Amino acid sequence: MCGLIYTKRVDGKNANEDIKRIYFSQKSRGKNGYGFVNIQTGVYVRSKYEHEILGYLKRNPGSEILWHHRNPTSTMNTTDTAHPLCSGNNFKDHRYYLVHNGKIVNAQTLLIKHEKEKLVYSSILGKDKWNIPVFNDSESLLLELASVIEGVKEKKDFSAYGPIAFMMLQTDNVVKPLYLYFGRNDGNPLKINATKERLIIASDIEGDDVIVDRLYKISYEDN
Image (tube, rainbow, N blue to C red; front, side, top):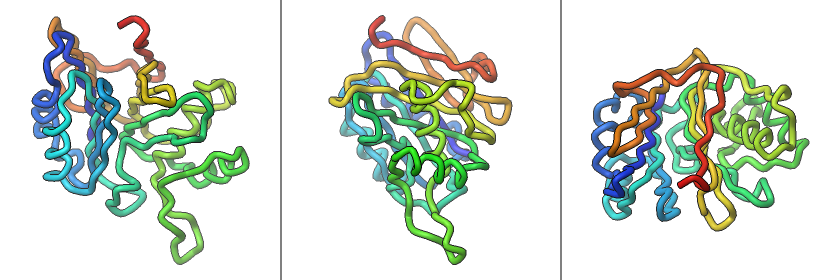
C-alpha cells in the first residue's frame, strides 16, 4: 500500500499546502520513501525521509505537483527505489515519471523481457541469495506503460499484472510536460476531485472513483 497525490491549483496558487494536507490525511498508506515532481518547474526529488522531502517541498513551491509516499514491498527503503520512478534515457524523445500503488506480480518476467528489449532499469539494488535481481517492481510497470504510449508495443500486448493504481507524467527531454496519464484496475483505489480552485487525484480523498480499466490522459497543450 502506497499513497499517490496529484494537485493542480487552477487559480495559480502554490499547491504545497494541498500536498501536505492530503499526505498527512493518508499518511498511513506509506511512511518509508518519498518523492515528487514539481510539474511547473521541472524539479524532481526523492528521499528516504519525511523531514527531508518536506523540506524540499517547502523550498520548491509550485502550482502543480505529483507526489508519492511509499510502503516498500519489493525492496528496502532507498532513494533509488523511491517514487516517482523515472524512465531516464530509455526512450529517445520523452521521459516518464511514474507513481504507483500496488504490486506487479510478474515483475521478474517483465525484467527479463525488458532487458531483451534493451530497456535499462535504474532501481536494481543487486541480487538476493538465490541470485534473483532485487528492484522496485513498479519500474516494470513504468517501462511497460511507456512502451505502449511510445507505440513500441500494442496496447493488447501490455502485460503487467497485479493491483494497480498509477499516475504517469510524460515530458520531453528538457522536462516540459506533455501529458499526464492515470488509471487503475479494481485492485487499488484512486479518486478525483475537481473544483474551480483545484484539481486533485489521490488515493484517499473525497471524490469520484476513477473508473477501472480505463487510461485517462490530460494534455498540457490544452492548458
